[in-house]
Length: 308
Image (cartoon, rainbow, N blue to C red; front, side, top):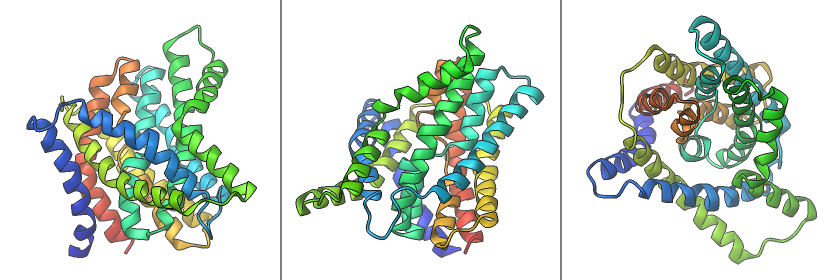
């Protein structure tokens, strides 16, 4: 167990550093947002482009994306059903709660944790997971939420609107550049590879600091039933369903199977409260982000222990 804590403790110490730095006033509240923008708009596109060009790895692993995406979609649909039909929340709130259960903070937490456990395989998984999350999960959840929040908005129009906005998404830009380089055989100069290496090494540390600072920006309110259900869905059922999917449809490389479970086991996106604000549920989504991130130290450590 001490070997497991040796992996997870430094990760959460970096998160705690960001949290304490902001809470103590050592840094201003604007710093996490600025650093997060650097990671999202500079580091992530470069890392995605590098991942789809990594020698020995598939640019797009459809097997992985179908299993990981299928498990995530199943959880999202179940989450919407439970939150709407059993908890009697509106469709907009139910969609956002379900998104919190089924969409991971892959770039800021999934990759740093998985890289310590499965090595280079985490680099490949990062690209595939972000494609699923940014091109399927988030547009779908926003479309359901918009259709529920605005009676005049039809689901297919809301989904098309969310999907067509992808061309401005840094993840999509990095993927497009990476695929062009991969399939044209364009050589990458050594100096560019060095820059990619610097950004790849920098991103995880900065991202974890940003997570801590972001969490510090949102005070914990009352822990509601919804918060507890979202946390359990995200930290328990998401990795469980992904693991079951990977066992039912196994991949050749066991590192990808373990990495998929680790990516699914981390909390939701740091911008989750911003999504909630759009539909008037920012108090619950902010509290859920703080609560789930704190609890994940124990659940992620337990998952690594259980999976050997």
